[in-house]
Length: 233
Ligand code: URA
Image (cartoon, rainbow, N blue to C red):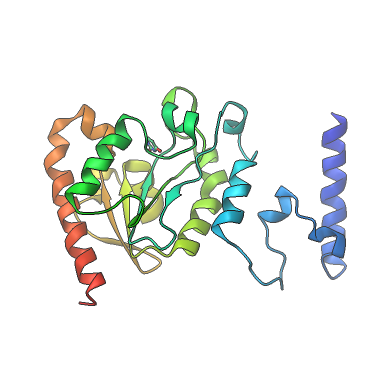
């Protein structure tokens, strides 16, 4: 076993012992990644998007960290009307650290303008996983599980008025369902009281033009729902 691993194990044993003995010691206030992800009982939450982004930027919770150039935490308005949730960064996103800037992103921009949403002012754009899977393969369940707390915290902090999921992985995650996207789309779901409109992923629509019509139907439904929410109907 490597020296660093032994040190890490002793750290965990010490932390657990301290916690059981009745409190987090003062010196534990210096934050390590391990502690940042587990709020000790009795501590007041001081979570923020900035804190979250800095944690994502140094995250090593799954193997994707080893090959990433940049994590892609998410970007946009901090008080968004709509949070869009995609699958995971592609090559261009990994290069820039910004979500949806490649071909799928440019197509998504067209969807936004079709329903009169400003990317910076009205939307927050994020992903299920924050680091690029090699060769753009589907994310593995352990990678989704490792990244899950980040997305949940993003949703808690941002409190979007509506969520639009892009593709199967985001729809299944947010709707807590194993159904395929073809079954999940076409109706409104709810995540913690927030309306969710699932639709196809822009990359899938670029490959399959027959998805254009259902996507347009979903976007129109989302726009109408948002108008209702924003006008208090
Ligand atoms: N596809 C995604 O799902 N997310 C991105 O950020 C880019 C492409």
